[in-house]
Length: 98
Image (cartoon, rainbow, N blue to C red; front, side):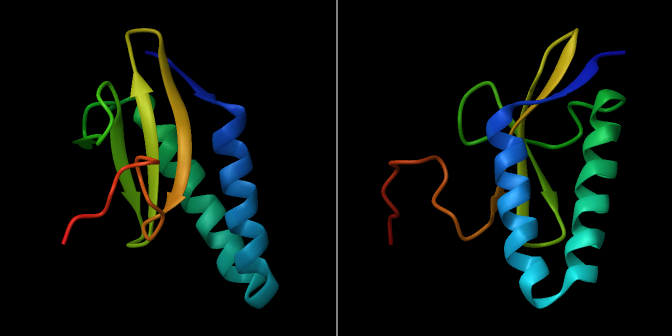
């Protein structure tokens, strides 16, 4: 089974999101943290369960309805790359089309 790895950017994303939410609702921030970490932990068992990512070689897991965990997987590692709010522009630099 592959190992789970959080890159520094993903950890920083998660901490920023939790900090923002905890200003208004610390309990909700804790629940979100627990949910993201629990669901990310299961990626080592089922790394291909979630949709292909918008960046080639990635996948995206939706947590709650507003948060996306972007990750890569290979035979040895599931690497969490980013934790994003659904309203964030992703991938960066891509124009929004109407």
